Length: 130
Figure (cartoon, rainbow, N blue to C red):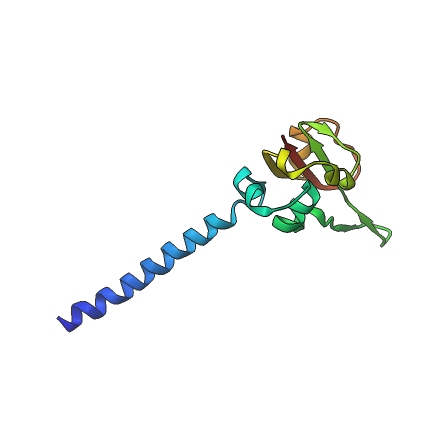
């Protein structure tokens, strides 16, 4: 009897840890998508505030090195309903309540799925859908 309990306890422990890990990953959401449910619970007033609270990495462009040794900043593109906006400041003009979803598109995929992508160095694109 004692031998059975000692065999069962580690299995139960492992299953409990596995199920709690899956639940916490779901509550954080996708790293590349902000859903309407997350928007509703954020209490953000505009798109910039929303992204800064939920996915701050989207707002931080990375610097790239060049052959001459200098660093060039990559730009982050912003799209609202497939229309390209000027820059990140435009996010402050979009009310959070009007947003259905926000998505991060990485630099490699952006030219293949978004219109009007410049040829210079980009970090990626924030795509807002209302």
